[in-house]
Length: 114
Image (cartoon, rainbow, N blue to C red):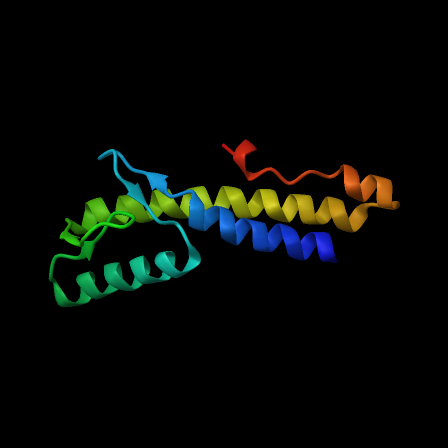
């Protein structure tokens, strides 16, 4: 249970320290908080018709086209989904470990996720 909890905490730290580099060459945060904010921004833009605004990691907001920002949102979702799926697979392997040696042999390396 401790190793599973650590893998989840490590994933949160990984998301915070590994922004997504977008087609504009800029980095965009992929934390759970930023994902929720991005979703709310896109929904609001579709409802009120105003251009959405979003910022690079550590940058200032700028106006975006809804389709362009939606594409960024999908790219972020896909990256995070791959990382979560990997973490869940490692968690299942941890649950299935029969011995401490088997458990300790299970590595969690988010950098290996493509």
